[in-house]
Length: 420
Image (cartoon, rainbow, N blue to C red; front, side, top):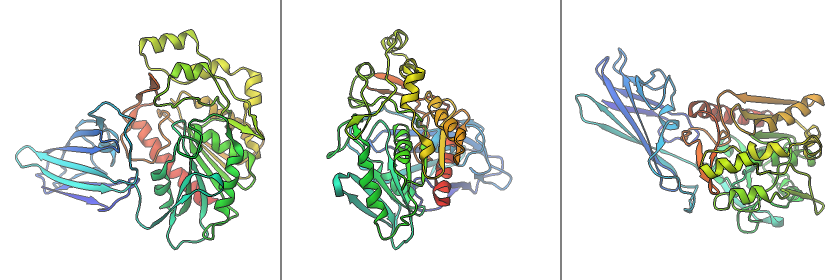
């Protein structure tokens, strides 16, 4: 019995082809998968397979007879991993470190066999540049010795910071990607409060001036709060020729005045602030409201969805003032939504407005998926309820649907950018 795994040196967003060969036909084998996340947390899955008549188990062909996932899924053993530790958000991470996938196959009458696959977060063949011109804070990746690349600005969500590894993985598919920090890093505001929309201007100018890009094309990509930002920046700057908003919003939502990982959820919700300013003035926003229902859920330690704080403030006048004029975006728009994401209605506002103005767009709603579809694929998706800011957040969706949506959203994003 032995493993056959290809490719041998994959990136994190690469689908693996995993086979176990030299088994007795019809024999059963237990396949265990384990890895650590960037904070050292342990993840594990276990599944039992029956070898085919050819004496192999092929994850692109065979479904487990029991275990952590159902059906045929080449990457099911990874997305179905469950954490073995309490989630930790207070440890510093180095996103440039690879992830080692440890595989163990055990048959009833034989010694276990093992294999290790090193999955790169930062693909080979890329050039990394820290961008600090004109007050910008970001990290850019692009393929070496390339030309006429489509430049992309990538924005993080409410967690703020820089999604450097996501930018690198996307750049490896043939783009120049700037992971731009709006907040949460040295040199930027600590939280998403009163962020000048003008900050995007120098980032756009910086990218368009690079000798290896096509200055006639430029896209903005963001997830969650970053998806809202992507739509707003696209509606403000004509140089933006395409926008991808993943679980974002067509209306401006209240900003955040505390760190979302360590602050107080109820305090944040009770003190709504503007996320954006333009010309020194705050832009309109949907305020957050703490209702008795929300207070009760928090007091009981029950999972909560953010929509409970947003929906009470969405009066017609407020929504009209805070709606992003997405029809002004100078190019196509791709909206990617999880059906069971608590904020799914916010994307529909953008889709309806684009449709009403006859603007090119596609709105994809992934059945059964929740909020956590914005990251690159092929990571565990089983942790859908997380303790953040003193409460337990419910991000919605089932793990399998969210995993499939994440992979499809990544594919659609790449294809959208390549077609600009």
